[in-house]
Length: 204
Ligand code: GDP
Ligand code: MG
Image 1 (cartoon, helix red, strand yellow):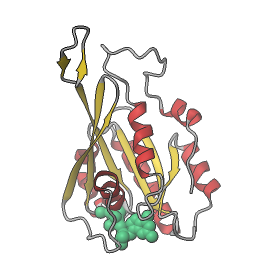
Image 2: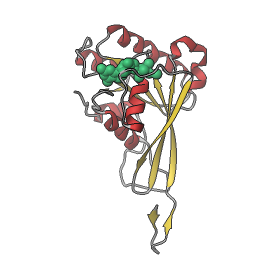
Image 3: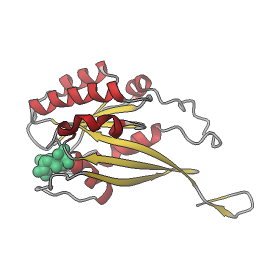
Image 4: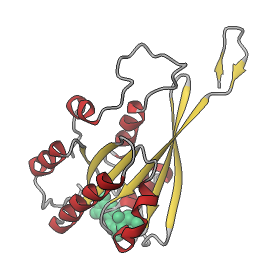
């Protein structure tokens, strides 16, 4: 709640943002969401069955960003569902396992898949997860790929809780505020290319 000029409180505006987790099975999509929302981690994270939807809120002075996190079971088995899954997504988080080359290659095909189906300009991020493990993908290789695809690159560990909240906090800051709430900042337009330039990578 915020206070107006008379001191009375008024409800804050909540901005819902659909955010899809995509990428190969076993990359750690579910683990990242669970870490973000519940701050827990399971070494034996149960494989996702069907779909899971969790919300995560980020509070700003005059509004609240509500991330609606969509996480489904290995969508690679259900490519025909992708258009429905991707529709209306304002953020796509493409996750791969940095200790696994095949995981990186599959993430590339998921990036293509998202781009071919998404209907609106979305912010896309590439997350190299499991940075607590020995890497198979050099950071510059992942960065170079992300640059080519106009994605922001981060590395994270759901296990160690490295960078997880930070990634989504940065994304929340990139969502334009409600039009009746000017911030004085000139970065209301979400542009993947601009975001990429301004973004400072966070690596382990
Ligand atoms: P998903 O199929 O992409 O949803 O992947 P899961 O979240 O189910 O994770 C797959 C496996 O990787 C599970 O055994 C997790 O415990 C493990 N895992 C997930 N994130 C990490 C991480 O950051 N580090 C390590 N070492 N293991 C992780
Ligand atoms: Mg899962």
